[in-house]
Length: 151
Image (cartoon, rainbow, N blue to C red; front, side):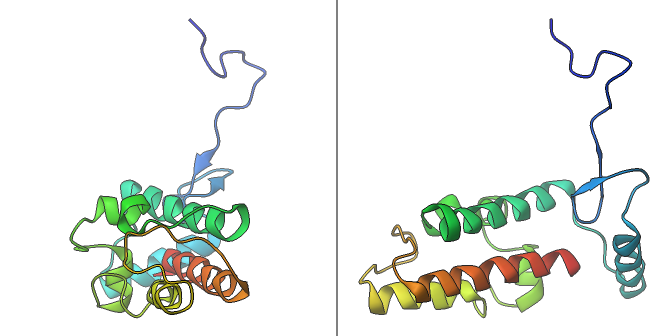
């Protein structure tokens, strides 16, 4: 049976920051993340649960794939956040916007753009980057999702 990092001269797997999910040398949070956690605690908020953090990272990866690798958007069918928060309850997108179904986000601009310019009607129809405007909106969606780490 193969064991990872079995040899004493190998580094262990990196720690992961409980706030942003990125590798960490030691401790529980990066210095900047610890400050954000303190601010959130003052407001009564809690850091993201691991499952939520992983879904958010998956959604960002989905949009980076759409923007840079020719991936496709199939709405909630291939959105890790939608699959985790089926009815939007406690979804970080809804927490930020106060609206369900990704309303008031670049995603709605994306859907409307595809409906109007590329004749891809509906939320769960495949959508890809077909023009410079698609790329711009996909970039806005990536930035929006990354901003949720700071909420």
